[in-house]
Length: 340
Image 1: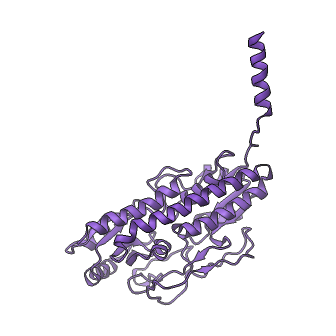
Image 2: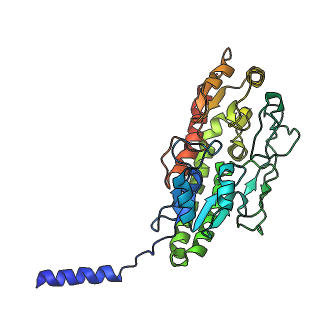
Image 3: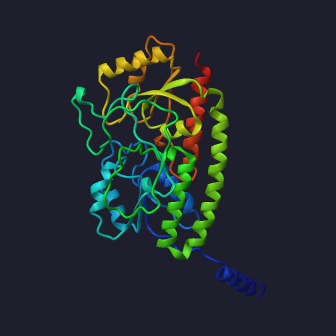
């Protein structure tokens, strides 16, 4: 009898306990976006990821499994065609009626224009005979300006997947935790509308995520403070948002777009720039050819390091965004502090 009573009591507790309803099928394009979505969906479900492992959105080719995931999705999150150009046509071809959310147009997002000319290679690439399909940016040269103010995205933007006109904005927007908060707010709003049964869970998760992002912001400020005045060169110009937020000194990039490798003339220009500015470090990225870094620092006192703006070396999940940002801060501090 005691055993039967215990089983009955346990069954009653289980039946009366609140159980989260199954979450919708959600797809995220890249790891940083996936991490924010996974944080909002904790306890409800897990989003699928398109660009897995060490792959880069700049050079990615769709797989059949990716197409199947998109067709089954109720919600798809991406940054936009200026970054994930490979997704533009597949998203237009979706037949399942998925809600497609372009986080590069999230309300409250601080947006910075691409830099061109001088230490930041122009996007034309005409002297090297390369095109750059899928990346249309403003023409002309813009000098590097720390004081350049970001522009906020319009709040009345239609977030459905329609026309795309990015006016040459840098799409690596997640590299500012305040932008991550704007993206997370749009993610939470979209999920709550698509899945009202779990709206309270999404709201609670957003509050927790915002607290973590605020703490991360303070931590990064302290991490890079001792080295923020030391100039450095990056592989491609992906760090403008981090630079603007924490006032570190990016002196130039080897290339603007990593799918277009620099020619000998460009490498020579960067080599001269390192000597001219006294750049203390030159940073590679995990997905791209590290030999280029050795070429440009040869004969200079500059050291080499690695930055990972797209989390190529990290495991996907809710903690990835924090590991990504902390990794950039730590790498900057380690290389710049050790350089003379």
